[in-house]
Image 1: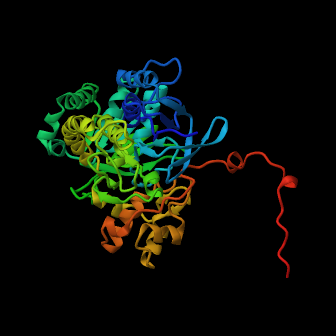
Image 2: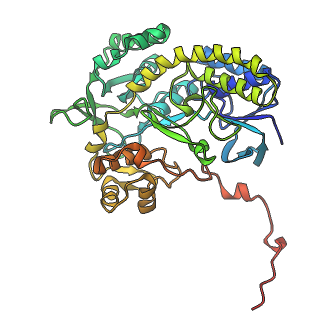
Image 3: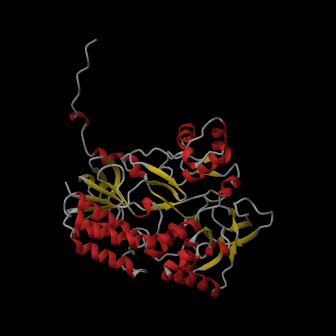
Length: 466
C-alpha cells in the first residue's frame, strides 16, 4: 500500500510528526513495534493499569484523532530507498511504500560489562523503566540502582513510589558534576525541579546515594545477592582498593542512551560521531543527505523528551513542503518558530545527555574473563586477542570474532567493543567506526517471511547442458 509519508516509531517524535503531517494534508502511515504509541518515555500502561504520565495519554489521544493511519505491533526488519518498508505484523509479512520516510526510532541503552552482569536479576535502567511504567512491576524487592545519569534518580524514585526498597544508588558522577551547566538546568526549571524532587524522595527514604563510585562486580549463585562498589577517579579509572557491599536481589544498571541508527545506516545516510554516539547528519529541517529521508527524535542525537516532539514536527513540516502541500513561504515561519523552541529545549537535553556519559576509563577496568558480547559468549580476553592481532575497527572485530553479530545486532556490546579498541590502539571513535547495518534489522522468524508453500509446486529450472 502506498502513502505520502511513512513514519517509523510512535514515540514523542514520531507521533508528533504524524499529527503535524496529517494536519497538513499528507496521507500518513505510522509503524511501531509496540501496541500503542508513546515510545519508551511515554510507554502506554498495560490493560487496566493507570497511566503514570498524562503526557503520553494526551499524545495517544491526539494521534487517534489526527487521521494518521497507525499500524502497531509491526516489527520493521528492512527499509529500502524509494521508500519500501518491510515489516512483520500480526498477520505475517507486510510491505509499505511512500516517497518520504521519517525515521524516529529513538535510542537504546549504553552498556558497560561488569563481572556478574549476566546474572538473573540484573537489568538495564531503561528495562526497569518499562517494568515500572507499563506493568507497574518492581524490578525486585531490594534493588541497587547503579551507573550514571538522570535515569538513575528516576528509576530509584519510581521504585520507592511503587513500594519497593532501594538498597543504594551508586553514581559514577560526583555532586558537582550535576551543576556543570547551571544555565542549561535553568532553561527548563520544570524538569530541573522534577530531578530535585527525585533526590528529595530518596533522601527522605534514607537511601544511600554513593557518588563517585561504580559497580566493581555483582555476586550471587544463580541470582543476584550482592553488589560490590568502589570509588573511581574522574576519568573512570579505579580510585583505590576500598569497596562497599550492598545486599540486594536485583540490580538496575546503565550508562545513558545512544541513538538507534540501524535504519539510517542501512539506507546509506551520512553519519557523524558525536559524544553520545554516531548520529545521522541532518539539516536544521531534520533532512538527511538521502532525498526524502528525515531523522528526528533521539535517533538523531539524544536530546530528551522536551526536544523530541519539536524535532518530529519540524520533519513533518519539511516533508509537507517538499511534497508541495506547503509553499516555501508558508513553511518558513512554521519552521522558524519550531526551531527556536527546539534550541531552548535542546540546551537542557544536551546537559542531561552529558551527565549520562560513562567515564572513558571504565572500559579499561573490565576484567579479562568478563563477557562483553553476550549473544556470542565472547569475553574481553577474546576481544583483546583479536585487537592485538589487528582488529582495529568495529567491523574488523566483527569479522574476527562475530562480536555484534548476534540477535541484539551489537546494541549490547558495540559501545564496549569500541572502547576496548580505543584502550589498546589509541584510535578515536571516528577511526574505529561503527558496525555495518544489515537486514534483518530485528530478529524475525524465517518461516513468517517465507510464508506457506509446497516444495512440489516450486518451478524447477532445467539444468544447463554440459
